[in-house]
Amino acid sequence: MTIPSFVIGIAGGTGAGKTTVSRLVTRNLGDDVTRIPLDNYYEDRSELSIEERREINYDHPSAFEWDLLREHLEALLEGQSIEMPTYDFEVHNRSEERVTVEPTDVIVLEGILALHDEGINSMMDLRLYVETDADVRILRRIRRDVLDRGRDLEGVIDQYLSTVKPMHERFIEPSKSHADLIIPEGANSVAIDLIEEKLHAEVEGDALRNWERGSLERELAEKRSLDVDVDSDPAAGGDPAAGGDPATGGDAGTGE
Ligand SMILES: Nc1ncnc2c1ncn2[C@@H]1O[C@H](COP(=O)(O)OP(=O)(O)O)[C@@H](O)[C@H]1O
Ligand SMILES: Nc1ccn([C@@H]2O[C@H](COP(=O)(O)O)[C@@H](O)[C@H]2O)c(=O)n1
Image 1 (cartoon, protein in one colour):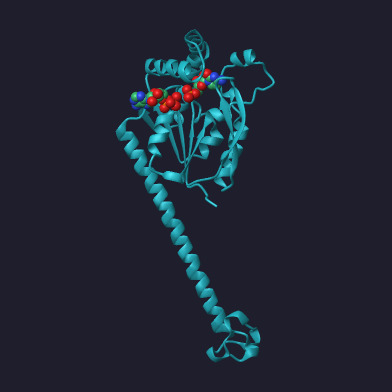
Image 2 (cartoon, protein in one colour):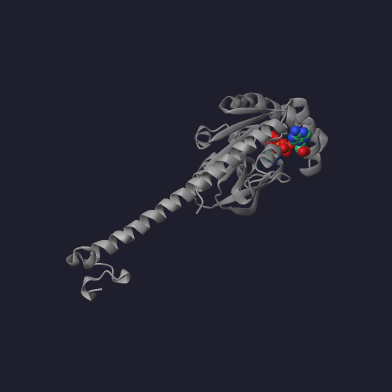
């Protein structure tokens, strides 16, 4: 069972480079990292038609199922696996598929409002905010939404002006005040290298602490078994009446 030792939150506006930063800072951690996209925690809106779902404000905190996310992070932090939901942007709804996520040493929560919730913030060891100019972000968003999320240009512009931009100003940008570090221009190499080093130090430090704990436990167990031998061995001056562990030859009755 792995008890995660380091939780990072990566917030920032749409297209700021959150996913890119998340991938880069954890690229050398191998299986020691679990990435949780906040997008997977958009509420299930199966009760609505696709037309109604298209009208939802997806940049308002109320669009997310915070209770489920909190519950899942708590479970991971206790070393339990979770069934993470997944999201389908083309139909604006949660998918049927769930993904089993095992806890690992490092957990990364990444999304526009990753630093919005106080309870979730308090579970994090490092809070990052990726800051990129709005013109760069909207250009990236247009390309991505049209190519990967089945949207048309007019729709992307309308959504940007009606909800994405105002919610960015009202909720996302202010969540920057909860950040420990602000990364300018997304994945800049100096910031990425520094954060990567910090993560490696944490993972290595954790491995060392686990090894030390294990070796201390082994030493204590060994000492305990020696104590049992000494206590139960009459030749060693132990009390025969106290009995002993026959398995270690310490049974007074055998006279061994
Ligand atoms: N520092 C950067 N320089 C150039 N392109 C970048 C940079 N960071 C991200 N991108 C590109 O911008 C797009 C959006 O990045 P992504 O990490 O998915 O943003 P977010 O997760 O914040 O929406 C992607 O095509 C990505 O390759
Ligand atoms: N059905 C949906 C759900 C969300 N969005 C938009 O996704 C953006 C967050 O994802 P990023 O990868 O850009 O951080 C957010 O701004 C929502 O507007 C959507 O368009 N449709």
